[in-house]
Image (cartoon, rainbow, N blue to C red):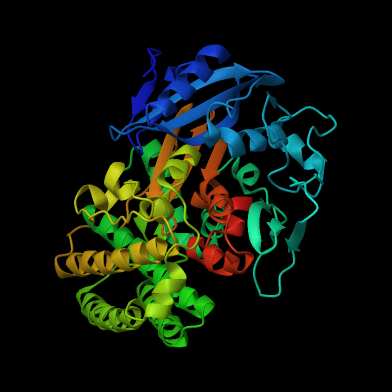
Length: 504
């Protein structure tokens, strides 16, 4: 550990911006690198304009259950963190792209996203200048007479969002996979500046459409923390039920999709239908299968009365029996296990080095779960046991999903059996000036991080979002090394990362 003082705080704790430590760049780099070497993890790294200066902001997750924050003034360039801290590599590329601030010595400085017009960057406060990163970049190349490239995308045969995958192969063996995303960059973070307003909640609901509850909960927690609003246990419980229903629908759908990629149709067919049943449970609560219009700052829009609780209980119990049967078919079929085991192996060491999160990290044996490490809301009162596996392969990622399905069902049933009393909504007052909050939520893919800062008028002066896919896409690239190229669809589905959550 280094001897530089950091500001430690908890998930959802409101901070005074003026109390955030301001270090010189050398001490900032020493602190971040030292903390990561001591098993802390970068959860967000970004530039925040303040008092006509730009500050490099670092937010770290520590093993103590606390977060840490530090900052340093930055001009046009600074010595890159990436050569000594690989977790910073994508954050620093993003900083260079958005702000024109060069991380000198970065080994792989190229665009993260493709902007329609560089002039749109002026909203970030940058001066008019030529972009430092070209819109089109050269790809990493492996040299050799027997090396060939296979390019996939960005337009795909299926109805999915655009992403380009460039495989460097020797025969059927993948030596390197380069993933290029950002073809539909929406500029959501910039549009949030000046909020919150009536549009903000709708923007949060569409950050990643399959993670509506996760992102809306992170946003609502941030606003509630800034406003000093304490929700009732009942509102927290309903949010927890909705978040676990979102996890269940996606995990069940993924297990079915994995079976489909293998060519094992029974589980694929059953899980596709069962996923719909769990989506319909969310629709029963709020009228929308993806949970839109359920979460809002101050609580929730819809209550779960006794009749609905009984109906949900019946559906959950039935759904758990059916998904158990469907997954048992998959788990007891030797050809399915043979296809999953030792495919797309990701080591625990690489997972730690890259700072991967969510079920991807837990499938490598890491105990990374916001509900366990940095609990908030209902998870401070009712705990879900951590689910991990050690092998880091496609089987592990499938098996962790199955473990979490069982535990999420049991959690929901307990909440429905003994629901807390209280109101479901409290009015939110005006946000205070010059405050900052970091809100973490364990979405179904992993850690969601929202950082909100207010100006002198209590409006958002900066809003930074880190979807779990932002951390984990590089994990997919590493899992493909020394794999057969025919394993890519199965490996890709075992991660099931978000394009739009990355692109924002």
